[in-house]
Length: 291
Ligand SMILES: Cc1cc2nc3c(=O)[nH]c(=O)nc-3n(C[C@H](O)[C@H](O)[C@H](O)COP(=O)(O)OP(=O)(O)OC[C@H]3O[C@@H](n4cnc5c(N)ncnc54)[C@H](O)[C@@H]3O)c2cc1C
Image (tube, rainbow, N blue to C red; front, side, top):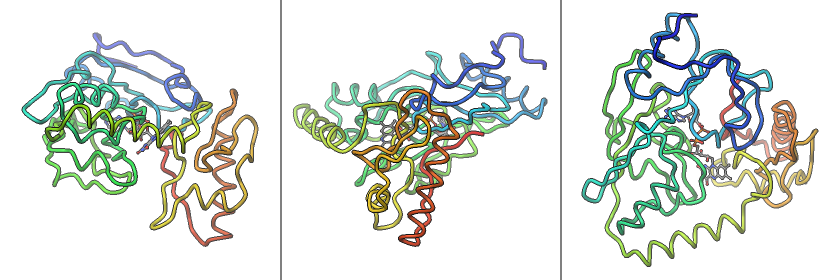
């Protein structure tokens, strides 16, 4: 395989510890480009070698196959993709910036709007790709512009109306997200802090963070909560191998230590079947499956 000389590409690189689920095999090829030029070269090389490309953020919404991933996994992790700048009431940030860092910057500059994202352990890129959010809001609502690269290495600036954001979905799937400009509002720092604490409190009361997990496994169907439906099927506590359905939040699957992707997929199939039999509802996964 001919990789660009200045790009470090690792072979059979373990991915498990790059996800919050702590599950998954190895990447056939893995690279962390240092800037746009390297990213473009890597995409060109992958194309020439007919390799699929996977973009990894903080790995907090992923279930990676036990056999790993055939192709090139790219993690935007260099300082170039972690830049943040203030532009009036907007924050411009690279896709590798953690949501927690964005929230911290906004709070320190008395800018409100991001508080509902507190506690979501992802990057800006992952959050935009997933249109991450909570019951009332999602990150797409704050977007002014997103800078992306297509798989031919061309850069584009998309405005919010060019991107079809919907529930846990964005029209950004065919791009690599590079950075975004988020529009915030002036607020009072004390009130922003209060909002953050209130969102955090809600998460701590409702989610199960006791063991490795990937957040909610299934999307909420219209007007229903997936967690409630799973609970009503009596599935809390059910386990396969080291994976089990949380007693606290039925839409969370926890990894007791050595859970495999096969264990998790087995539980997901069980949930799908029981919910379909009882409620005639086909739950859709919220997590992304890489196989
Ligand atoms: C404890 C916990 C709580 C959570 N709570 C919530 C919640 O309240 N609301 C919510 O919406 N989510 C929640 N999540 C899920 C997850 O944190 C979010 O979806 C997050 O935005 C994913 O970001 P990431 O960087 O981890 O993306 P990853 O998991 O690494 O990737 C997710 C998807 O985004 C793509 N992607 C990542 N970066 C880029 C990029 N730069 N360009 C193009 N595509 C990219 C990946 O290819 C993949 O398809 C939670 C997860 C956990 C573990």
